[in-house]
Length: 171
Image 1 (cartoon, rainbow, N blue to C red):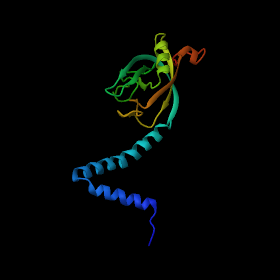
Image 2 (image 1 turned 180 degrees about the vertical axis):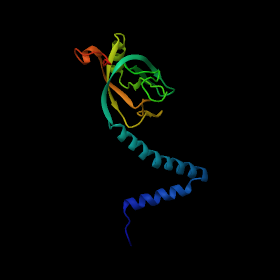
Image 3 (image 1 turned 90 degrees about the horizontal axis):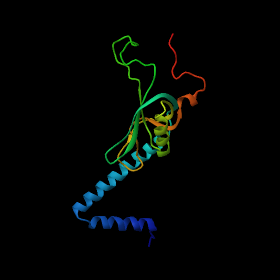
Image 4 (image 1 turned 90 degrees about the vertical axis):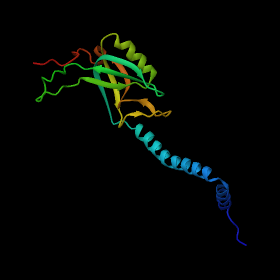
């Protein structure tokens, strides 16, 4: 007489229990299993890629907008107007407009308070991490930003670069 392992016995019992289900329960169980097998790896890969910073940098300008956006997934978003860009199209060969607005997200409440305090004083320098993609899924833990740029620090512009003009001077 051959002995069976505990894993084989459990699989046999599970298979027997599945066969006892009604056809509606079998369909529901199959759909749930498919969702777990498909969504699990996708969410895991997304979480791993979200931890990677594509670039790191600084932008200087004036905060023009800071608002909370969302429906079921609330994020803090903002806009920074940068100096020495033309919206009229004079700097381009074609008559295309140039957007001088830097769109960003603020996932940390401490950084948000610093931005609100510094925005009243005029020009600010924002330190950011650029991520690979926007992450605004309405799933807990994946509801951080609606832009690629995640603000991690803020300074008032004169403190950021001592004895430097706020914007380069054109000849």
